[in-house]
Image (cartoon, rainbow, N blue to C red; front, side):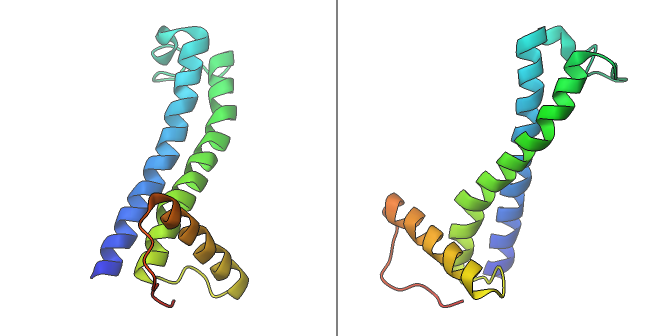
Length: 118
């Protein structure tokens, strides 16, 4: 049951990280063209030829990917390592993820001597 809760929490963190990237793209467009752009060019229906819409679409995908990578590196990997949930079958990737999670736990001061073996 603990693994299910950890998985659901990490999935929610992943979705939240991606949504923060999308909202950051909308905020960038609002900063450049003013807040009224959220109702006009990015509203319903959007103006597809407006530079704000094009900028939003170009910035949204990389920002969402950066948010997803940040959520994986800062939340999912330490949680999966802490509770012994396997992420992959490859030994090299598993070793990298375990070392990364141990570094994060060492920095936060939450490192115990023993770790569960995945």
